[in-house]
Image (cartoon, rainbow over all chains, first blue to last red):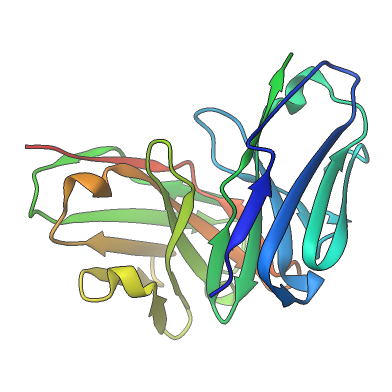
Length: 108
Length: 119
């Protein structure tokens, strides 16, 4: 069973700064099966990135994903006020979803 | 556009069962699998299982085998998730989410249903 570990747990940044979030897997897998989500308080998760690096429909280009194997990264190039939230990575495999523990991006 | 609308909040006693609905619209219901995911306070998102609305086949997470049942009604484009023998640690927000094979990810989510288990 794949375990996803996200770091850091919390990232304190100011609007306009760059955010770099990490997701590390316990075993190697195809990047096609890695997605990133944003969740704001009281809301459902929203798909940002699929296939490790492709933006979902309507997602601004300040969000980008990269990585392969066991190491994946979500980058927000310049934080906007609406970007502060919790971000999760997700793996899909054999009909099952696995989520990381999340990274909270908070306003410094 | 795609919408998944879930039933309202529930309060249940330990040992009871809860059944949550998820009504789909804006797409062909039988063409997309539906996952159920929950989020307990302070915990990560936890996958419960998946249902194929076309064939009614299901796969459940091992932790919930024996007390989780997913069903669907194609006439109303609705999927259901029933969890039995509820415990206090089943208190969580439960989400349904559509699986996209184009994205290999969940591209639309319901608004969530809070289930509180308390004596």
